[in-house]
Image 1 (cartoon, rainbow, N blue to C red):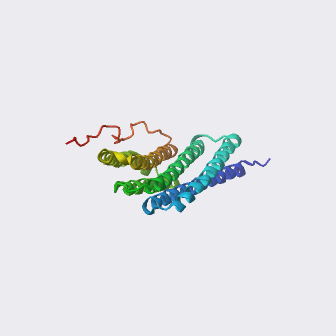
Image 2 (cartoon, rainbow, N blue to C red):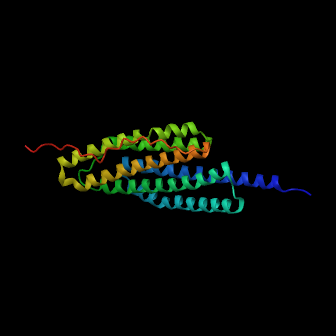
Length: 240
């Protein structure tokens, strides 16, 4: 009697490849949204901001399709061990990528609102923070494609670089706000842009953690490096 096991295994492997390809496509769309948001921040382009907000629906669609794919695999194939981790990782990564898209869209909307205000500028560190989190996302997607646990671990262990730059930005905005309290709305938008970019970095780190677990089968139990001291009070100039 002939067995269909080899065919079933081949079909499952093909399904996993399609799942991974969908994650890579979704990551590419998220990276594009970040690039456009940073361009919007630099160029004060409301039309581009609208395009970013509208394209956010594409990431939502990606996430829904990936979730459905994963549910079918779990229900019909009942994967175990490495295969199960691969499916669960895809679910988690898709969720992080969708939220990254949300933060990119929010950054674009805040940028347009910011630059519609008289005298609004932006700290020099904002583009730097944007570039840093964009690079981290690109690196962690490469680690996912390659199944590179060491690269994922390096990204995870440098989360404090984003935190340190974010903390510096917050302190700069707080000092500017103390010196110009009449520009409260400007500083509020700057704070929210910085926070959105910092959250993109956090989600990239979350993906690194998932990639490491999917590749090794071991969770990262050490405490994540953090350097976010934005909650600490900043000294304000004394009144003369």
